[in-house]
Image (cartoon, rainbow, N blue to C red):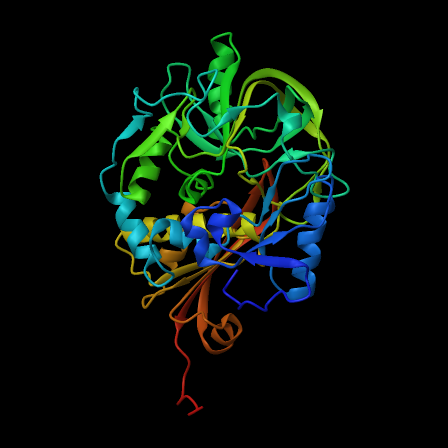
Amino acid sequence: MSRRGAGAFAGSGLTRVAPAEAGLPACYGAVDVYTCDRPLSAEVDVARTLAELEQQYGARPTTVFTRITDRPGTQVLGHPYPRAVLLAALGTDEGSRLEEMSARLAAAPHPVLPVPTGTAPAAGGTTPPGRVELGGLDDLPVLQHRPGDGGRYVTAGIGVTTRPDGSDVNLGFYCVQVVSSRRARIFLDPRTDAHRNLMAWGAAGTPMPLSVFLGADPVYAVVAASRLPAEGNDYQIASRLLRGEVTVSGTPPVPADATHVLTGLVRCERETEGPFGEFKGYYVEQRQGFVLDITGVTARPGAPWPSIVAGAESGLTLMSFQNEYLMYAHLSGLGLPVRSVRYSLEARGEFVVSIETDAPSLELVREAMRFDVRCKLFLCGPDLSSIGQALATHGFVSHREPYHRKGRIEGERLGLALVIPPAGRPVEY
């Protein structure tokens, strides 16, 4: 959300506060942060209030909800990942982010270090400093986001998994449905690295250890949302983007600055989870998820619990943001001239991409389509600030191929290279 001024949400019942007052890091100074002190239930009320604010004011405010009636003493952070916060966390800006992030990805990684051994644990246990042990999931303000959801879901949690030998540390967003204080269900798509890791643990005859963290530096959310190579350590990718060492704790490891951490064991046993309101604006009906036995829950006292509504701005921003920098890094790494890459939020952050280049070509379009198999429409031209104008005035060549979704063909994908510039003399104004 862009900065809109102190009166942007006048009459909304929100109070503007400094990030530190809301328990948020300095990067949240890039947006206006609000608190909402109305008594609201974690079951639908919080998420519905955010949606109503967006409908009324044309923007979704980053808001800390301070009075959760069914989880007293807790707070919820809604819309935790606006684009400006991601840019501030990375220490870059809109104009230079693609080139800068591409260069960081190509640089050498920095060390990934454990919490120093001399650091004292929290009182009475082995919990890292700043967090305390809770009784279970019922002590957290996990939201039910939509009326048709099958229950409460952890949506902003970043799951950490490894291979049985501890290698290939993977970060990813995986929906977790709360069943009880010590039991949950997690959906791991067979195409994900976490599912691959689970199969390896299953072959070894043991449940897969899982950590889920929230509230850490937003850069980790950028990494977790990104389609990265299956091999290696995703914390090394984070260290490149952060341009510095990363400090972690626990097994599987989580960032030392995380405010909330869940640990558990994922079994190959399945149970029905859902329905769940997905990012495309439709419910995913009931499906089979894996059983997750919760072994620990820790939280930093007073820290707000981040939550993403699937299909709303925070989640879609993460999708578009990661798609943009990865596509730019891929194309520029091949020597193809690219000025900018933009994935449309209206197309759910990943199904329509605009690639601005001074040398549009079918070669570039085909390479972009090879790299991103989920996107449906690829536009490649010299000026795509107004797509309608560009399509009206440029001649283009096209490339089509089948669109595959979950193993079946659903229509086609289309790439357009606007290679023929408009004829004639442009108007003066």
